[in-house]
Structure formats: structure tokens, C-alpha cells
Image 1 (spheres, rainbow, N blue to C red):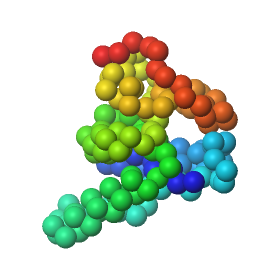
Image 2: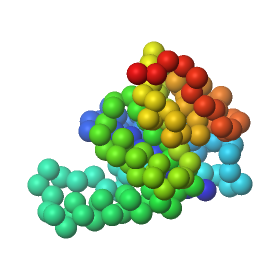
Image 3: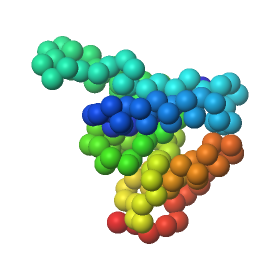
Image 4: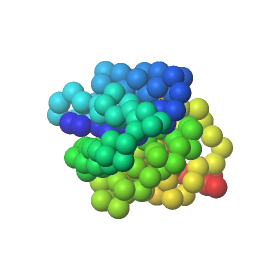
Length: 144
């Protein structure tokens, strides 16, 4: 099972959080026949600010290919990163399963993000519970 972890990777704090979440998924996710293989783009495709157009195209196409191939996308939404939102939109247009994660609970969640997900976890504890029994979990809280 391939899990694509969509997450902001602009600074070292975000990257450390992403690694921690990826390890949690690998160790605790109970939703597949086999242990999940987490695809974390920061491990494969970080561009330098002076990247060539070919480098940029390769990263884009490689990421989009993995988004298509993954069995599940888990998107960390704490940072409201435009790249993560774009990845979710692409995945949503394919009609493939994704779940949204806010590691820090928020009072309101965007309806376009919640309705496209098989599950929404508003806090790390909800995420841990969901991973032990990953079923559809629609968001029923307040929307923005």
C-alpha cells in the first residue's frame, strides 16, 4: 500500500513534523493488507531556488504520477500550503481516496477540503484513533 503524504516542506520544522507523521503512519496505520509505504515528496524532490525548467517539470510530473499511483493521500493542512491544496485538488479530480489532517485542532475547516475526503482528523489524537481503525469519517464540525 502506498500512502502519499502531502505536506508543506518550506522549513526544517515542517520537514521534521512530516517525518514524524510518516513514521506514525508506517507504524500505526491498520488499513491495508501490507504495511504502508509512505511516499514523502521531501525525501525525493526538493528543488533549489535556481532550479531549471526541466528540473521543475520533472518534480511536477513525478509528484503527479505518485499522486495517481498512491492508494491513499493524507494531507497535512496545518500550514494552508498552496502546493498541498493543489495536490488535493488533483487527487480529488481523480476520485481517489484522501484524508485531511490538522495536527493542531482548528475551529472551522473549509468545506471544499472536507467534502473531498474520506476522513478528516482535527488533531493528532483523532488521527491516531483513525489509523487504528481507518474507516470513513466525515467531518461534522463547523465550516469556513
